[in-house]
Image 1 (tube, each protein chain N blue to C red):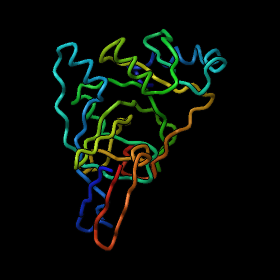
Image 2 (cartoon, each protein chain N blue to C red; image 1 turned 120 degrees about the horizontal axis):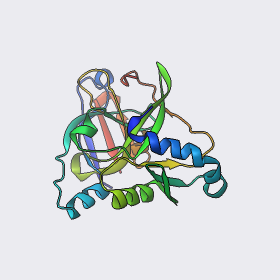
Image 3 (spheres, each protein chain N blue to C red; image 1 turned 180 degrees about the horizontal axis):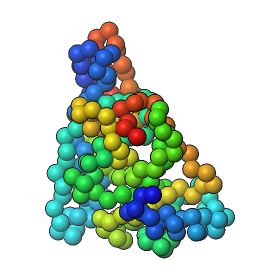
Length: 142
Length: 79
């Protein structure tokens, strides 16, 4: 079972943040390859694992940087708004240790500059998250 | 309104009753004003969308009476 463990100083303050590479989905990569078009370079992002998020979110500028077009829409509820419509994009998330998850991600603004991605329960549905507060570590296995 | 998928969303609403009657719970692929096909999974529909149209906007949507919103408890989301 591929897995990785990350250590974050002050885990309880910063949260379970991990570096990921966000890339276009595998189907689009195949289509671009067969058309002889360039494959967009994956984007490095700081991602927060968020058990309070139904779905995965990428910062709204990221699809443009990856040359992605929407493949769907989703309605979202947040603490400050209800029923906001957002675009959905098919992306691959590359974690450490060759852990790769393909999922639909919502493009939306994220507050602050330190987080570019929220890893939601759609990704966690595929694996095991172990959060060890007293060692400031967390492990994600798939 | 999400402008890039405005025509597709209008087409979904126009055909929603008929789609609910024949394919409730499945996933519809819509491009422009046309309902292209219905699939058992969203990934199958997305794959077909990319293969038929390439890297352009298209709509894959679960056929259901009421769309359930995704919930986000964190205030990191700026909406």
